[in-house]
Image 1 (cartoon, rainbow, N blue to C red):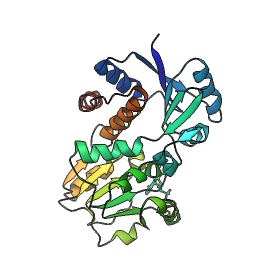
Image 2: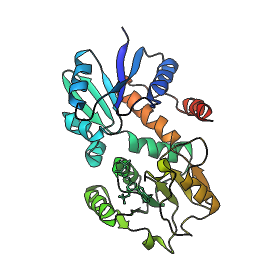
Image 3: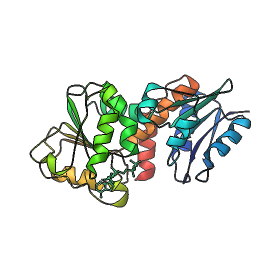
Image 4: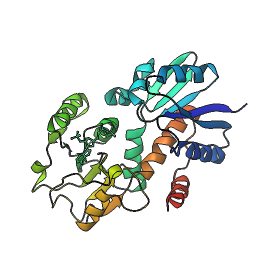
Length: 273
Ligand code: ATR
C-alpha cells in the first residue's frame, strides 16, 4: 500500500498540494498517496487523530489550522516556534513532529529561483497577520541589512517586531511613515490581493532595483504587482514559486529527497494561464 499523506484545511477543495506532491513523487519514484482532508473548525484534533490511526504519515496544514497544528505537535522546529504556526506534521514512532516550511519556501523562491539575495538588502514586509509571522524567521536568518514591517493596524506590527526580537531586529511602522523611504525587496504579506484591494502604500517606495513580491499568486498580475509595475519596480514575482518551494521542503522532510521544483511551478503556471 502507498504511504499516505494529505493536506488538511477549511476550505481545502482549491488546494494545489495533491497535484504538486503527486508530481514530486512521480519524478523521484516515491510511492505515496496524497489526498485532501476537510475538517470542521474545532474538529482539527479529531480529524488528525483519525488520519494517524488509519496509518497516515504526514500532513500539510493550511488555513485556518496552522495554530492548531502547532499545539498538536509534541516537538516543533525553531522556525515553527518563531512562527507559532505549523504547516507540516510528521507522525513517527507514536510522536508528532511540527515544522513550518512557508518561510524557507519564500526565501528559496527569492534567493535561488529569482536569484535575488536577501543578505545585505533592505526588506519591507506589508501586513502583520499569520502569513507574515510564518516567514519572518527564515528571512531574518538571511541577514538582511534591515527588516521593516508596515501594517494598517500599527500595534500588530509592533507586536510582531517585539515577538521576533530573539531572532533579529525588526522595525515596525504605519504606511504613512514609509513616505520618502525606498527598499530593495518589498513583500506583500497582506490579504489585499485576495480581495482585489491594495495596501495604502505611499508613492516612491519602489525603485528600478526593487523586487516586488506578492505572497498571493494569480493568473495575471495581482493589484500589488500592478502598482509595482506602474512605479517601474525592477522585478515582479507572485507567490506561486513559494507555494511549490514550501511543498518541496515538506516532501524532503517526509521522504528524505529534494524534488526539482521548476518543472512543477511551470506546470502550475500553465494551468493558471
Ligand atoms: P493572514 O493570516 O493571511 O496573514 P490576517 O491575520 O487576517 O491573515 O492578516 C491580514 C493582513 O492583511 C493584516 O496585516 C491586515 O491588516 P490589519 O492588521 O490592519 O487588519 C492586512 N490587510 C487586509 N486588508 C487590508 C487593506 N485593505 N489594506 C491594508 N492592509 C490590509
